[in-house]
Length: 167
Image (cartoon, rainbow, N blue to C red; front, side, top):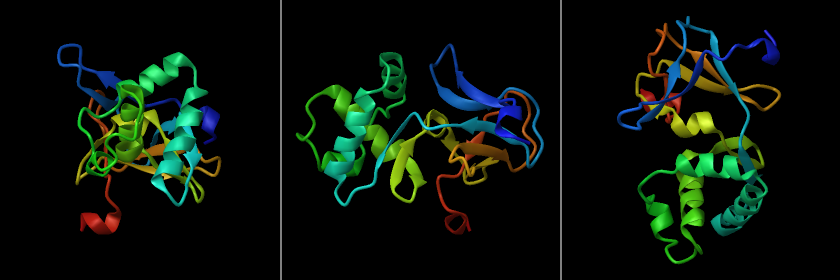
């Protein structure tokens, strides 16, 4: 199966009453089936200091189209992560605070030298008994693979922990 052959079997769902967002299967899925193929919205170089990483991410963020920036910021957590609290006063505005919160809580290693932010990871909830897992393709796109049967409209969950941490 090539990347272009994949029909997305999961997508972003927003509950119209509560505004709750999650990843949801849009059809019945079998174990081993690729649910989603996703490219990062934003990537930046890993650095020795968090400040340098934030600067690189900020510069790359500013190059994104306005609608993409707004979408990414809408996924920002409503809380300030602990490590970010230690940086209070170092950002200039609310947009930067939201982006830094996203980088701290919703990003993942992309390559050996880069971190990245995928919309799918930003809205997929954690479960200690996930029904899907993420893997990187050789093309460096992220895919979701079903671990067990997933029914249409069922929430797709992943573990934020390593396999060893789940034992």
